[in-house]
Image (cartoon, rainbow, N blue to C red; front, side):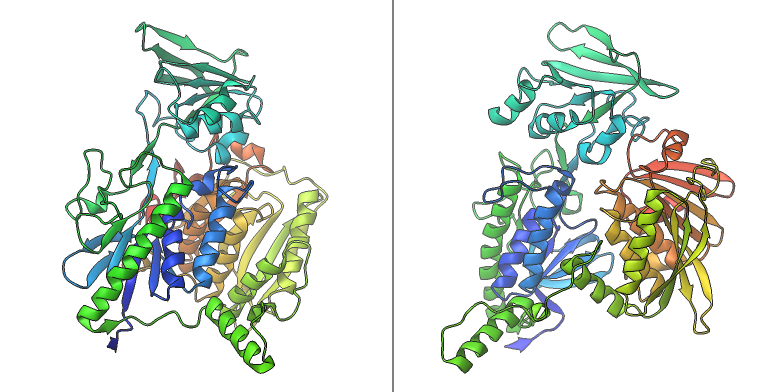
Length: 583
């Protein structure tokens, strides 16, 4: 057998529950496994606020659940890459996965790319997306506090999210296209029994129209009588529409590679192998009768066991062996336990991991786990940064100052801070229509050169970068200090080619799970090219910006270039952000 360092046993395309589950099983069995994800690891479930039907877990949210899965897979030695799969060469003993960061050679492939929310095509759906029409209750529900909302759909998501939306909305009107719900009765009953939810069966949304402040009326079709009626909220004000009408499988890359059904879902055999030997499918993209987290993780485990066998057979056939994950945290812990047992002459007992030898000191903002992650980031940073604060007399300003002080104290000298200005005003004296409004409080990231001179990078956050924005802020520090997150060469060339000044304003919510990707993408571009400025604003503290751009969905992206203003909504990768910029 010959070790091939450029070979994987299995490449998993998709970092949701199915992919993470498979990665955990494969890595634990000591197979070299790479999990490839173009967006956030965790998949669609990360936007679910309440997960209460996953066995063994009484209650959690989607992001916490999948972050635990990711950590388990990583502890067993699974590798991770943020990149987009662009094609597959499926023939031969060694397959090739083409990605935005280069080609990957592998024996087996697991396709776990999932599905994305389906658009239903009513009049105004595209026009008012982000300005009244939404697809994520967790991200956008708070924007409709004190208003009525329409919910479209009759499955699990529609029933569950309707109940969730009653936390904010005065009333939820649920439009079910069929004669009854298509989900489990227990889930449907929660919606039926909620006094704030009114359900209309055999009903279809045909269109919406808007006034100056948002959506003002909807056209609704009674499928039984064929009659259409105009619906308006009882208070005569504006309302929101949330669409939960199923998903579209993300299988465009697989056309002509493996067999798909008429709707684009992957056809699999009993043990999840596709029509091509060595290529398996797991999760929401395959033909199945139930699409839930538990069935996705089950798929991942079943496919992983089959791929173990397949990879082993290919090693025997080719004489090639990928390097094994022998130095994972789990493997080190096992060796430590064995050595301890040999030294003492007793049976192994639980032993702390290497990084747990000394008790971690807790802190106001950052607990032990976060501190470990920060230590890794600060240890990799090649340059120094200064965080420039613009403060006012608000409580939020005090929180931001304390947040930055604590972060600087944990940075081992990689960060310093200064206060550029401090006023007793409440920070509301800015122009919300201006270029990158100077709203306080804010923190700006500056590079410090070898002579100790501080220069702005064009990266800033207005508010306190906590919640879901914490990771994107830390990665902004890493990208500004260097070496930064890698992008493929064509993408890097596109960033370098930007010659004109571009201002990117991102309006976000700390509860939004899609916002961090957009903020990170814009700030990754700005960190590399000084012609781009990318600043994020927490809308909870700057409602004037929400009103200025009529924001009813986040992230909202405002791009100013050559005197022109473009407003866009939704999660954006680095290439998609470059498309918006026009690079």
